[in-house]
Image 1 (cartoon, rainbow, N blue to C red):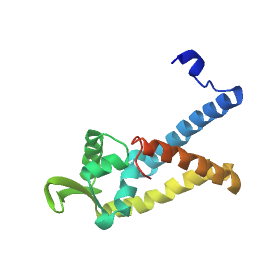
Image 2 (image 1 turned 90 degrees about the horizontal axis):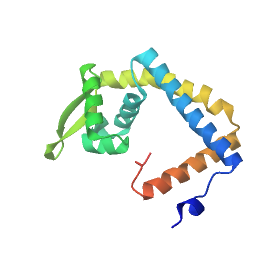
Image 3 (image 1 turned 120 degrees about the horizontal axis):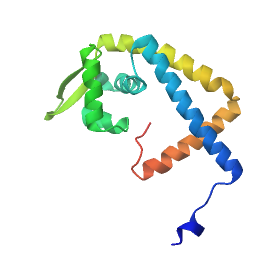
Length: 161
């Protein structure tokens, strides 16, 4: 394989779109993270974990499963859960039916924190992303991003949303 001739170099318009995508996603995630930290002392990764826990049966997920869902290392999730545990937002328990496993559980206090943070997060997503696209453009963006998720998930690289 000749890497020089086999590389599908980006055209100038593709390069512009790619760089806009990189810049926009970096700035958007930074802004959403800053808004959550300022208003609720939560980071985006912490918020994502709380959302996952809130949607799970009994607001509980095995730590290994949680790490896979948020595409973080087990040690990073353990560290994050420890911070949330110190704030009384989550607690760890024995996994049901498996004495070796550990689950993270969203506490009632944690659910209340998430309910408040959700307003900040959704307002930010709306103001910094949704309002900048027509419904048709937003639909196209969603379809393209879902195809990317599907393709990467087929390769075992990305957790299901």
